[in-house]
Image 1: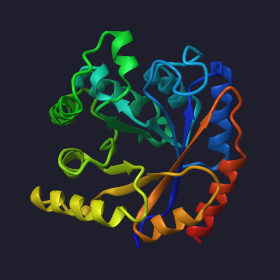
Image 2: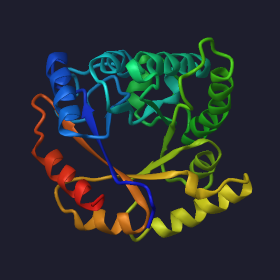
Image 3: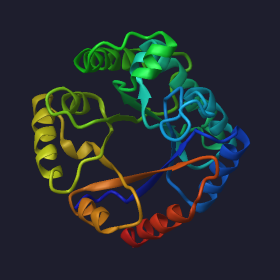
Image 4: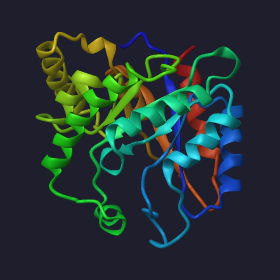
Length: 264
């Protein structure tokens, strides 16, 4: 079992709700003690009315950086295809500084993925390509992001954590081994040991210890038995999503109680 403390992340899905409701939910979740707040990087809702209300991810995060003081935050996950890598690095640095506050240390997490929602690409004029091409672009972008961080003035306040989502064994887990501080997936307990073994092989190939990477997993519903199994396998960041128009926090409270029990 990992020695890391268990953390809870909540994705406030920015669909079907006006921004004041999202803003109030952010504040409530920070007060409740959630560890990380996420949004998503989509231009349209993913459920319900496909043309319903929705907000672009990075502009919303600028507000979150100002209205919170403790919680970490980011996008689960940012689509690499939508923004130039050097621009993404600069934007991340900006959010890092905005969120630093009196402590002087930023709270932004850069979640990265290769993209999958074809409607977003088509309606906003991006080339969708193939899954392999998008993963190759992600692999090429991350060294550019890291290089840009090293040249920015002022520099980021900390080593901005990189979260990478996905479980593909040939490309995605290789990218995780090379660049990620957090690996996020939807992997079931029965499949996770194999994925971890593959990731460990990729880490060894680049001279990295897999223990440097935090494991994150998506939770749905209120059955904690699967979470117990994942915790025993080394997962320490558990995430869940809530959707507008009204964000029900009862399930979040259940998972917070489970988190606190894990941490003793």
